[in-house]
Image 1 (cartoon, helix red, strand yellow):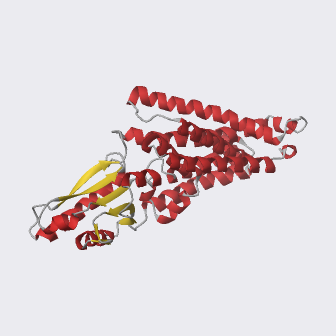
Image 2: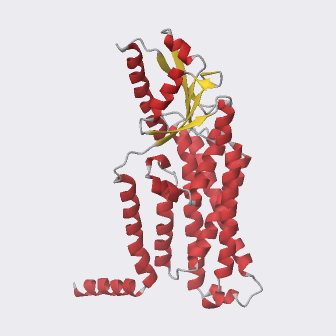
Length: 370
């Protein structure tokens, strides 16, 4: 028993003496607790974005009943309405803005309801079966329309206003099709950061980094080489995910040229981040802890597993500063929604992040201190 306790005591002393390992070992569970506590213990009800177009306009003004419908729906406190000009082409607006939900009140809404005729409002959105936020929005609108009908007829049925569902995606997708882009993004992040950190840590331990100072190799060349290696590893991981998805789960979403460019951008950005992290961690234990502390919060805050709208407002603002958010959004835009402009925007963000961290890594790397 004494020998066992001696092993435990020795390991604890080594852990305590390593300041980096000590810090990250304590910081990682602390970050996770703060993260999930903020997400799930928040008392306020989440709000969901809904774009709304009132086409029932006469002489440049919305009709009485259509305007009342919009105003009352806006007062539910659950939906954050964004009004769209009645002259906009709804389909082009959805594609151009990359939005996921739009409710359209058709022309003739007021006149039809006034004489007791049925009228259908159009709800264009991602299928509720695969998106929890869209499912919630649809449920809220259905309840509101039911109450609106009750007020109109005073006795409930017949229903004057009904909802017509239209999918904003051209094909019928399953949940796996919406989930895979997030898996690809998460894989590129973890493999890129952990790969770069681990590579640097191993070479530091072997004394290779100090020897590089005596070679003609520049720091920029070294970092670009590591980043390109991780890019190849990320491409292989992505290929495995897609192959298994197609063969096992009948995956329908497949990458196009814009997806490939975005994946390359992500596979460059995250190893660049890893090279910067590697400059501040010296041992393998602390390297793993540091990687976990960076990747896990980003994984859960960037929409990989559940919509950002389910989070408190302050966490949504944090998510906008995380590169994985833009990678996930871009992958879904290119693979699911076919939104080229939004994909290109997210690609530009990822490329900017990659170039920034590669430059920073080059400036702060000092082989003689390794």
